[in-house]
Amino acid sequence: MISMLLCSLLLQTPRDLPAAAPSAGSAIIGGVVTTTEGTSRTPLRRAIVSIAGTGIIVRQVATDELGRFAFEELPPGRFTLTVEKGGYLKTFVGSRRPGRPPSLPIAVVAGQRVMDLAVDVPRGSVIEGTVRDELGGPLATAQVSVLQRLMVAGEPRFSALAGTSRVVADDRGRYRIYGLPPGDYVVQTVGGGTLTGAEVATDEEIKAADAAARAGASAGPRAKSTTPRVVTRSIVYAPGVTDLRTAQVISLGVNEERTGIDLTNALVFAAALDLLVTAPSGPPQNPSIGIASVSRQSVFTGPGIVRPGANSHFVMPGMAPGHYLFYGSASEPGPNGTSVPLYLSAEVTVDGADMSVSLDFLRGQTVSGQLIAAPTLPTLTDARVTLVAEGRIPGTTLRNPDASVNADGSFVVTGVPPGRYRIGLSGIGGWTLVSATLSGADVLDAPLEVRAGSDIGGVAATISGRATEISGVVTDSAGRPSPEFTALVIPADRALWLTAPRRTSGLVKIASDGRYQVTGLPPGDYLLAVIVDADPQQLADPAFLEQVAAGAIPIRLTEGQQLVQNLKIGG
Figure (cartoon, rainbow, N blue to C red):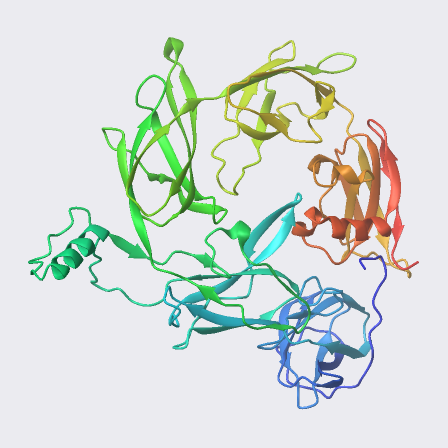
């Protein structure tokens, strides 16, 4: 459980080992590294122990035959340790999450001997299996890797796991990925086999040859196809699907082996797409086009790589079967020499056959409203309202529509593509958005939904020149500053955890003197916690936030309130 408690560590005595050039000091930190095999715990030999902290960047030693290590001549201060060895989880000493940061700092004073650290390092988990081709045979040289599944705002997101690399299937098509920390994973593979210089006959050519053979006649020289067929192996996810959203999810604990995770990666025909770009009043100006794979939930080709020719055509060869999103921005001439923004959002399903597709750039919608302040509005000369897009696929947002604010507080944002947006305000120093209501709902706590063909009006955005602030000092039980911890403020209302990022402070680093400060949260009820085991991705995990809430302090903020809340760790 995430807590405001410090870990107590078991003690044993190491012998001295060679270390990097020491910093001036007289403190010593040492201990024993072990690993648990079955029910027995044994020394972990030749593991690399690293230390970082006050007065040093990184020093390393290797454990001896009994798993012992020591760092000598350390200055007074706080230090973090990590332990690494191939096949084992990188262990952050003091972390309660196996294989995950951060380490819990160890504080020493001049001459102190902390010689009793006991660090147990588990083996990493394993996924293994076989990659086969379309005929069921082993697919040698296929590249296999894993993606970690995380939940972000209630939606699954997949990303490569830091510290792991692709492995290559052997001659039996077998692969083995090891050293994995606990978590949810998807296995993917690409490539394998060779097709150098191979010609691929079309169905018509094969049928013609078969008919000639049945008639007892020679088929004669095979006529070349005017459009050569190209075959490829696309990215496939276990057990053999091309859509990441339907892939098998493998949940791993600590030191767990999952075998039989087999994949089939069949040869498929790649298609050539003949694409025509259009706009409402003729060819679009300065089009920038990108392609995303909806099947893989990632960008396929970045904006600017695809550029139509003078006739507004371009060809995309070698497109493997799948579902794609063509997205982009452009413009067209407007009245009085102005430029009207255009957007592109077109989904295309490729099934292996060449095809022609029209990509239509469209004009966006209008979002308008009014800024409200009490008792009067500030000067709005430089004020701008921005709609920050929440892209359906990460990396597919090309611009965030914005507009200046008129002297009376009114604003009109034009050219807004359909999608989900957060409303932002800039250019008014010391003023923040408190609420933005539309049809009785606060669209600051949930995304504003813009639909094609439907303008939005009547957004009432309330601003305040009195920002809230939460500040204080975090100390340990001895009254010493505790900069190794992190402050976090989340809404008391669990319904807002995943929908209202403006009501979450994010991870606020505590300064070296123990001070922290959180500013700009809107009025409301909150939970304040000081934590040690966290990374930014966990802020979208309800289970993590429940753990935070269990040890948090409830607070209430009113408009402009300056709240001082000191915290003591373990006391």
